[in-house]
Length: 276
Ligand SMILES: *[C@@H]1O[C@H](CO)[C@@H](O)[C@H](O)[C@H]1NC(C)=O
Image: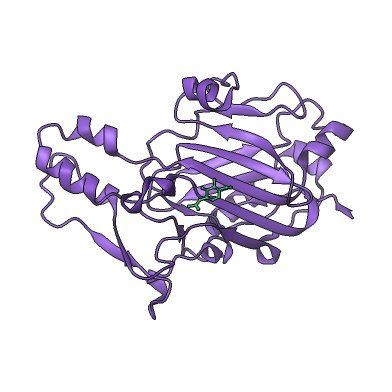
């Protein structure tokens, strides 16, 4: 069953208002109805900070370069904590609040660069946008946005890389330089536009699956096919840490870097999901 609804996966509910408040005339034609599907989605992540008990993480952005760091601001995530603020399960990403999901700290193992979040919209929708919002961490560096109809076979929607050259070396796709743009209804691009280190917090990633594509005003079967999804997957492949950047920023403070790097933060990604 196909539902012609423009869909937006929002990473944070307060941005929902922002998106809904500025509907694009083009999308109105294709997607007359605006829905928030967040409440109906199932969400899963294959690793979460604190899922096996208390873990400490430190917040990078509170370390201001040039200042000593006597007491890095560290906190605990713990799925079993009685305090909900210590729990960062992936359901937080779609619960409509400002709580967030958090991946395990990289200090616990480099495998935590690779965490996959899967959303099940429970029906097939035409997805117009996917918007992810980082919480108190930089946006992820390398990752793939994928979609599926059956939950088994996934196709890429878009690639994100820390540099244009990594588009080629990691994903074997010529980078789309600068602002993302699309030359075909089903073009899968790779962009470094959203993987920059700044902002260090609350960065957003807007992926348009419809807007700016050739047949947006009179959608082709290719565009309808391309945007059809029941399952959406966010495959993180490299968390953006401040390691290299801090080396530069704090080269006068070697002790600071050591402390900091050894207490490395995880990327924190908030994925409340709304579907427009
Ligand atoms: C999560 O699943 C992906 C496959 O989608 C896998 O490559 C990755 O290693 C898994 N991550 C962890 C931490 O288990």
